[in-house]
Amino acid sequence: MTTSVKDQVVEIIAEQAVLDPRDVAMDATLEDLGIDSLGLVEAVFAIEETFDIQVPFNANDPAQSEFDITNVASMVAAVEKLVAQKAA
Amino acid sequence: MRRVVITGQGAVNALGMSADETMRAMAEGRCGIGPLEFKDVERLSINIGGQIRGYRAEDHFSRQEIVLFDKFTQLALLAAREAMEQSGLQVTDALSRQAGVVLGTAGGGLQTQDENYRSVYEDGKNRVHPFVVPRLMNNAAASHVSMAYRLQGPSYTVATACASSNHAIGQAFQMVRSGMTDVMLTGGSESMLVFGGIKAWEGLRVMSKDGCRPFSANRNGMVQGEGAAVFVLEEYEHAKARGAEILAEITGFAMTSDASDIVMPNKVGAVRAMQGALADAGLNLDEIGYINAHGTGTAANDRTECAAVREVFGDHADALRISSTKSMHGHLIGGTGAVELLACIMALRDGVIAPTINHEEADPDCDLNVVPNVAQEAAVSAVLSNAFAFGGLNAVLALQKV
Figure 1 (cartoon, rainbow over the protein chains, first blue to last red):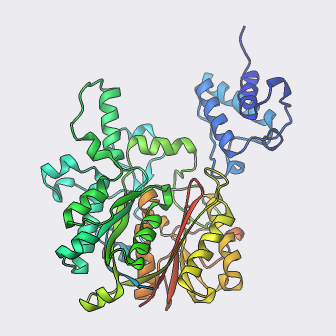
Figure 2: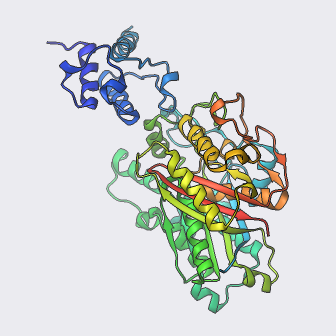
Figure 3: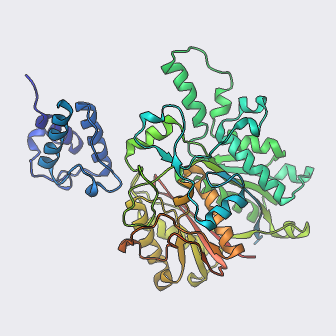
């Protein structure tokens, strides 16, 4: 059984939020999930390690980064795009 | 209370190989930040820093010394040599027994660690040089400076990340002021520009890939530098009695802890540290003409620091000048406050306020006179030097013209 990118990203985010992945809503924001700046940096690191990709993310000003952290769905979409780019 | 003056200064960093060269570069608004050069730099995503160009240990030290001195120790010794020569101080037997050296560093002998980890982990070697430990220990620089000048009083190293040097200078200041000793050497040193050092910072994702632009709306992170600065602190009457040239007087010091977050700055801690230094010096708000900012060039620091300055100074915040010389020499981490003290001395002694270079776009969150791009001339009688470290440890010094 292969796990989808979406499931893996949600799992990483859930771990930082100390939640069950099933409780992570796709429209939830980092704030909703109680993930602070350090948690976000760790999540980005885990995503990079899991998919062997480079995430364009600057903790200095996360909102200005190319990596869209609006909510869980936007992060999943961004990772899916990066994974597809890597495969291409 | 005894008065404490600075009678010697020495520095080595990306802006110059002496305190004078550094001050001249600061006055000219010269940038010492450029492409990094060291082993494996191509494996880093951060490729710029305030590296000392063309530095060769053999130009300054013997083979036997180099075997024992990590680069952070070498830089501290070069700065101490200049400071001692300038002060003209003779270390008599009596002075030798009481004078000491307190230096700041965050990483200590990181070059030594990096080389030797590479040797045992990557190259698979099972034997390391016998002096790895005495080279890499954080107190190596302070110890070698004490040996060089036979300073047998209180000597140690302070490691409070980016506030290390300010904490060190503040402690040395308090020792002279309290009467524990008539003379102390103090300052700080850092040499973190190695693969492992930068790789670690890369992980935190607060480094800029293209430049250090403190207070500028388009800033995107910090840039590291390397170097050292050392000062001779001396009791005022002691300095006057021997006709020493007095560069400036240190009149106040305060340290606070945010006790809130391991990386995010906190306005309250910064406010309390600045207020504490002013109170310790007995200075009124409107006497401060210049603040050497912590000014790292990250979104969070610069915004918080400016808000803290506004809160402390009220209306006077618009009258004073505040600049970050990190824009020129980079962030020297544990050594940064020491090199930045030169900007404070230059303001007091020469009436020249070092600029914040690379200032490209005004930021409404940093709407103070940040001395953008070009130095300003101003007669200044009192200044503050801010350092706000990771871990929420803040240290602020107050200096005055003599």
